[in-house]
Image (cartoon, rainbow, N blue to C red; front, side):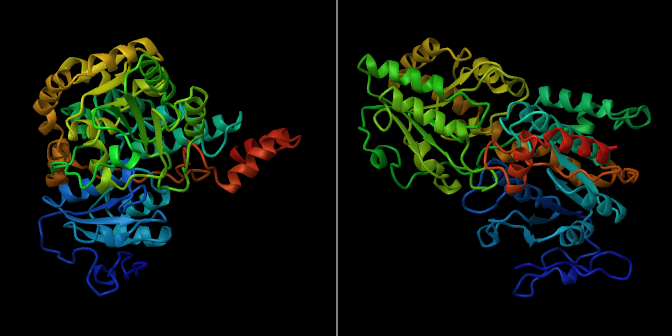
Length: 488
């Protein structure tokens, strides 16, 4: 199904033209409903195999259906419409800018993350209000990435980073409302908004920070996890008495897989039957693929003699509906990261899977969740790159009795992390949209259009590879001078 909307005489899409293959309208055609028409523009692949952004946007579409007529707009190649077709909202697929503009212009509100600037401009001209999802502090994350926009060389990475900053300057000036994950991130984005003239005294008088940027962190599944098989113990041949630690997500550039690998190796050297399992080694989006950090982690496990004999890597990406098969077959969940600028503003969404499965967590200090886990007694917090403290944490949680105490604390906080709870501020803003979501003034067109560049841990496009090769060649200085001249 690929249907572009036909424009009516007034420039607005005729809603009855947005149909699926069976002829059923993909967006609401009611003009009398007091409920707003909301389009949720998914930034990543949606279907059975989804990473965090896909899971988040599908969950938000479901939650917003309580207060709005919702359409989920899918564009990234690889999305499977049939797998989200019966979740309580309409689905529209777009193949180019024009078809996305038509979908957005047919709605009162657009909820989006990474989106073409021209789509936003034309949507605003049609009267659509934009809510930008800033749950991931992408500028901070970019600093921790080994590649930015497909580049791993300087000054190309810095140039791509300035494009990232320019894109968010645009978003912060165009949005009527914003959501993010925690107070650290809210302060980050409020400061960013003030620096780019996106917040003025006339707009702030009588308003609280929460009226501008709401806290809508990642949420936890509403249903309880159930397993259909023992994916770890039976799948990898690990005994029932073994202690299993699960790394429940990808190994991105800013993570530290080496410290847990060394810690498990140490405990096994002392005779303990401990296993560390990594799943999600290859992102479902081919633009991201398999990070170099995975190869480094495998090489270290091989060098230490524990690859496939204490440290295990499950290739590919675990489908969302199969996550429980792994989570419920583990004893402890572990997540480790490096000390970096990214860490300060990170929100590790995988921790919600730890809570969903009521698993004790072993995490590295420095990010928001480390503080939360320590304060609520939900696991153990270790130092950056500290193998000894990681070994100590594993030993402290090695007995079923110790883990049961932690599980009771996790059970105490779980409900506050359900999607219904985490999305409450967004539902309130959307239900009172005409008051809470002011129309922003049209923005002037930039001299050079800035599209959101991919911040990929791996797998650059062939164009990026070519640009990178040129940058390293004797033609590099010439290329950079031409780029700067074009920029001016």
